[in-house]
View 1 (cartoon, rainbow, N blue to C red):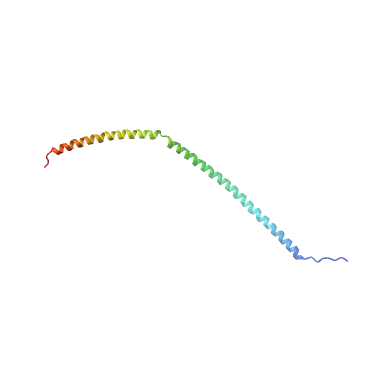
View 2: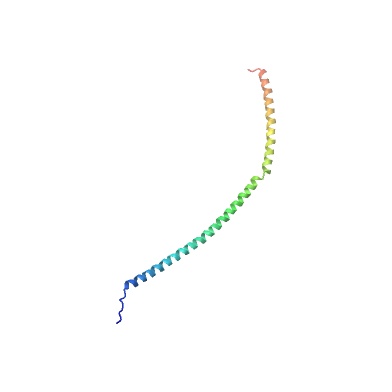
Length: 112
């Protein structure tokens, strides 16, 4: 006597549903991995661009610093300033002398 065990279709339904769930999960993981890969590629390209602009800014800053430390122009301006201050000192001394002389003159000059 051969007995056939009755088939429980709920078990097959559960197996089919679990297969579709695993397939959907794998598809979801694949899509997310592809998105992550694309985001990584974009990040690398943006990072390369930003590092290039940062290098340009650093180069410009170094050039500006080199120009700022070049004191030839500053030394020339300082020597011209010293000449101007010496002339001003001579003129101030002459004005002080004239004012002193004119003050003594007005002390004895009769007024109305």
